[in-house]
Image (cartoon, rainbow, N blue to C red; front, side):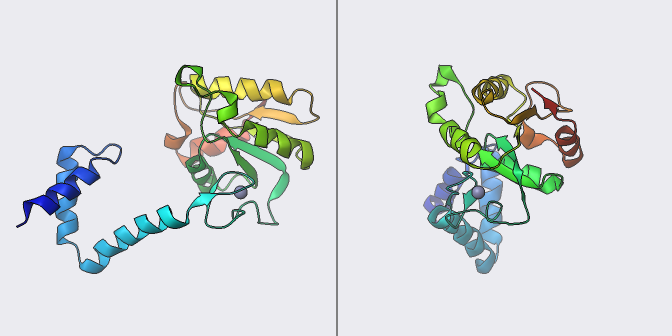
Length: 197
Ligand SMILES: [Zn+2]
């Protein structure tokens, strides 16, 4: 067997989060044993997201089109806007099925130490939406950790001059958590139990 190509695949796989050398090795040999069709399916899917995925020009969700499926869905409640840190958070909240409004992705959270200032996030775009759209409630669903809290507080201050209700999602999670890891029931309850800030 050609050692170079399998070693190369192992090296590439270790670039994924949570994949150490051992797991990468196991995955590489698993891929090797797969049918050609299955293995090509994986590589095709990777190529496709890199070629076609882009940010929704309204909410910064991941989409293949100019406006994402949620923003363009006329049955969504346009008076509620749920603010999240990452597009992957939308996926998690959507899976709960308990939110029917729209989203806004900040593409990160404030972290002055790492140089993540408000200008680096999609905060200006959020303010524009609040100004021009018919939003009645902004739900801040940033993560329940230091950065997420700081970001929520910052946006809360910015929204004060506006006639809009601002709520913070109530997490049934310990502080320092990440909404990514919340189960659907906990997240559903967190949304229901949101409190005005
Ligand atoms: Zn969108």
